[in-house]
Image (cartoon, rainbow, N blue to C red; front, side):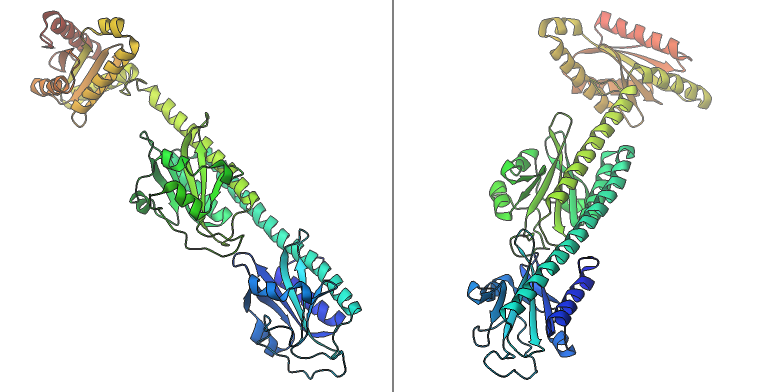
Length: 500
């Protein structure tokens, strides 16, 4: 028995060993199920009739508590003579063997139980022995032998259970390691989070996993899910970071995760309706019962950038510390991958975009302008180049400071962007100077775009316009002509000037 191995085989060995070495024709193992706070008959050593009657039967922990009463305890076993109890788990099956004779004779209605206890004291199961070959009730020596054997059996059961848990935890870590090794290579946050949700579900046994990320307004936007769909979670009432912060109560923090009973979670979101109610629930002190499990995702300075929400555990049990620790480590790696991915995307973006206005930058402008000139000449097409800058920008900076100047540049950049037609592009080419490339635009088209910019912004600006190929057939000439027209418009106050 101490060799461990598969739990069903081990329980069968325990029952057989007790029967053969101690002289009982019937031995029944009732194994504790923490998800249901009950005991299930998992093993019956005895007659076919006993197996058919008892296998799979369950009895609540409360009912067993009435039987494992100290008044029945002798030498660590629980001896219940016929008539001393109202009912006993499994006694729907009454042995058909003849009773013994004499003062210490065994009766078919007698019950004899011995607990299998974990080394920390909690019950792993209960073994019921019956139909003694001697047809006599047990002596103190018989009970000592039974309890000694049960203690060894309990150690074997504990080892088997712990081995199974350890193997599962090791497999989970290996699975998470595989997923984690791929995270830095995932190009965008949604793909990272999809891999995270799948990894948490497959490795840690949660049927439902949701990943949300904070948007610019503080709303937590569903980005990836397993079990749920992103679409159904997006239809739920909007949730903001401030709503979740109420759930991140340190008194419910375990290994960096936040595990809240349903009543506590509801208190913190009242009067909001919870977005989901768990369906895979159990009963008892160790069972999952509408709990909430949230794991915040933090950036490098500790700000919450998102949340992982795990629900519907496969085993219907509260996650162990090992599981929560693995979940936290995985969440940390996911958050780091998301931040790294965002940084890489920002670096790529800034290679040809201006960081303040988010418009294309001067380097991109030079490349695009040369490309547009070549395309116009090759395919006999035209385009317009608009160069503009803000009127009185230096005075604005001197009077109100650079933050006010930056605000003005951003407002004007938005006006440029919003005025563009499909296929047009806007650039910040330096300081308060901007440019527009207007594909296949006539002078009237260019004037219409400039008019939209002026109408959309309270900030005054001057514009110079040159067309290819009418005004120039190479990029430098075209830019020089548009720039000259800009300064002529600024000088005479006309606002817009076309190249001569």
